[in-house]
Length: 524
Image 1: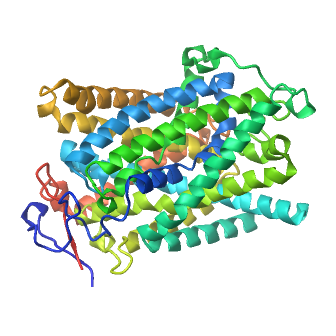
Image 2: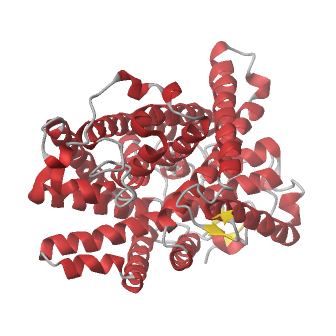
Image 3: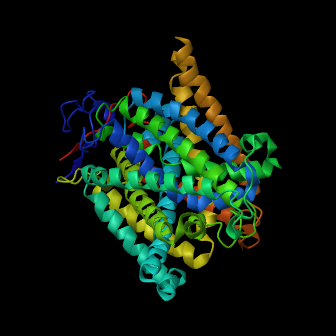
């Protein structure tokens, strides 16, 4: 039976339970040395789900910044890269699956660290719900294409059928995640390979169709270097809105870090894998954005990316015209595979963060239990699946534009916990910043700059989302629904923190997890 050593972490002997990994880091009962550099990078890419991200946000981003969409992709990459350096340095010093939660507690104390962990958890729940929604849409669209039946394809718009299908996909993804990292890794190579291959084919065909003069491509635009100039965006408000969406498109690379206790060379491999994943992402986003704009433009007419009838699911509109009816189905398959694969791997960060929070007594001890056979945080994984299903069902019944509004709210959550982690890096290593130019740059300057950029986006987004026009245009009592979703979830986290402070006073007094605390071990 699983149990948690309830002594303060500093008193836990290195001989108690657990098995050191290749770097001598004690784990929490997870399966060590299960993933190498390539596998870690693939899991990071799969969690981001580049094809899913593109179909969900190409239209929304084009609607905010027009033809400057590639510039916004570059601008969104910069703070992500700077924060990635912070993650890499912190992981070298403290390779703990709690990542942002653990590091922020060590730097700033239990309260801010708890809220940082909550930000990661709730951001993941939002992503999981959106992934399930997109997977459901493409499941029925693909079924309609394969059967040649418009009636079957129309089931995607039936709210009851949509919700039931979505819950079924969440249940399947939860079950696969429950079976451990080996099961996860085994399917991701094929899934990521399929995504990148189909995306490359779409890009090549979009370039070929650009300027062809066909009726579907009359709205295409001629390439200009100004597309890569972020200063050419028409307003700062439009830029920050686009940047918030762009940041969402990179979210998930830190899954490489949350799987650090299961990775070979846990102190170094996850950071390298994250950087590899981010370089692949920015390259694929830029090329796809340019190709799509050259083919159909970023306007609201015809197949233009910002057309409100198709902006929330761009590839559904472009698959046939760009790739033809035969290969267009392959793009449907790629989006479905992207969403399903990411739905499964996205359980990794939320389950491991909850495991760490529980192991350090910031959440109920039952969530620290690891399945004796599959070596996964079983209860945390199942709870994440249930929470995802409930969240998506409620949001779908409340708002018909749930995907758009939750994606906009997600940008707020991502900026919140990434910025905190970046600042935590500089503060944690403050005594080392004068040792060398490298330490000053990678442990201080780059993380702080990344944190400042994300904080600026957070504050600007916070003020903009009050307006109902932000996002889908829906409102709750006159307040933008994006604001209600984003701020409401942060307030919920604060309330839960107050509840846990009464249940786990030792953690919130700073007695369990400190700068000197070694990793806790979950005994089996």
